[in-house]
Length: 111
Image 1: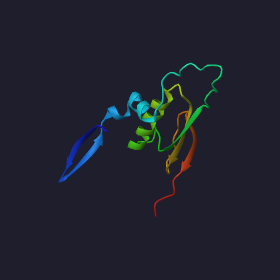
Image 2: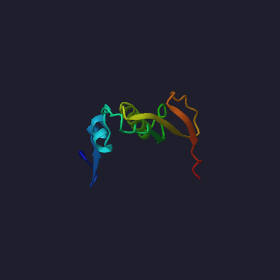
Image 3: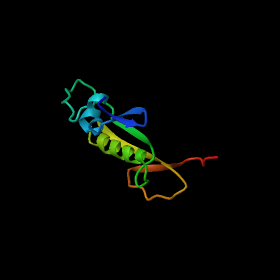
Image 4: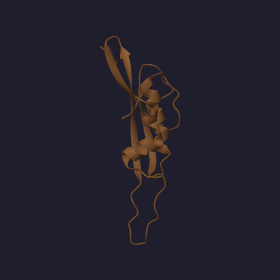
C-alpha cells in the first residue's frame, strides 16, 4: 500500500494515497480484467459478477460517502463486473440519491 505519513501531535498516521483508488490498482488487487478474453466454444461462459456497496453515499457530506462514490465508479468501469448496486446508509436527513442507489438503510439514532 502506498501511504503518506501524516503527523498529528506526537502520532503519525499512514493515509493511503489517491493512487490506491485508481481503477488499474483496484483491478490488479481484485484480479479483474478490463476486457474479457475470447472464449472457445468448449469453455463455459463465466457468470456475471455483481457487486453490492454498503455505505454512506453522495450527496451526503461525508468522507465515506465520497469514498463509496469513487469505488462505485472504479468498479463500474470493469467489463468483468456486470452490475454494481449501492445501498446507502441514511441518517436523519433526507437525500436525493443518484440512480445507482437501489435502497437507503436508515441508521439507528445514537443514544
